Image (cartoon, rainbow, N blue to C red):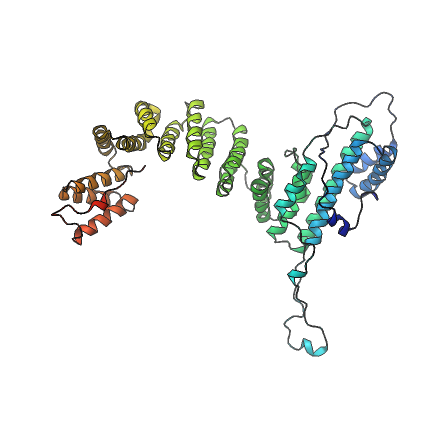
Length: 477
């Protein structure tokens, strides 16, 4: 680092609240102007960087950068770049100063050690720590704005602009490796510390999530388990699904496994949903959708988006997503499943009239044939809710006759049994309950049926006066 940018760690910690300036280096495609003077020192720097002589390149780069600052003290590009490198230095100082290495207990607990005049083993008092870093997530979001906006270097000659871009990359990569090595030395198995290590790479590569090959040596420092933590942090805490996918790909390569973006995205979406972030799951899954041309896979990924909304309680968005899938992919193998799921989400929203209207053509659609039991059941439920009982009876009879072993029959049998009980038709009630418990053991409907049968046996149901009104169930999909 240059002398102008260096400061004691204590000072850096105190100025952490400085407002960072937004800047991102971009490579220039313009050519050197005919009259531009070629400085051999810049060429020597580039050659050192190309040859992998990073320490020498950084040393020369520091002096070249210092000279540029002296030549162009008012240049906004150089001022912004200086501030950006300063932010990286602040992050490094905060993280490294807060690390505590794990040390072996050497003499502690060895009998007789107190007799040879050695002081008792030291016990660290956590309350005395004065420089603990903030949570990694807070550190990331506090400093992200310094790395988001792009800045073209057109106000500098071509050779200087090229040097600045390469020098910036080397400086950032050097800071990243410095933090990571310290973390690995302090505790090579710490997942919490590993999250601190990922902060600087994430801000450095903001807007360039396809360039993680620039920090491959950083990722190689961590175990597969820690990389698992890193991609989850990048996804959920940093909201960077593309970066998360790149880290997961590296993890798979490290363990010798094949990596499928679509398969990984389906699993990773669960992490978003578990944190009630269906919007983030949607962004993640769309990355995988854009990566495939297979229509069945696209439908599966989009259904996962709908599932994410539903698991977070947003059934309206889930139903809307399924409707869009059916419209966009009418010939996909998942069409029937999409429609059945769509009606299920409408049922959660109590859209009974809409279900009654839209299930009728779906029952005639050959694409829905594998899911007719589910659609028939939901139509029966909706008809019951809108008090179209005669039609509901016909739909229920069709379901029972055509699909006698399908689990969707179980709640229909339970409803029929409780209706019979309410009409004091006890023999028919017992017959239906027995058929239910034998045909669909373990289901929720069977458990409720067993409870009613137990009350029959215990004479809790007074067959003379029809007393068992609490057995009547509420129809639910």
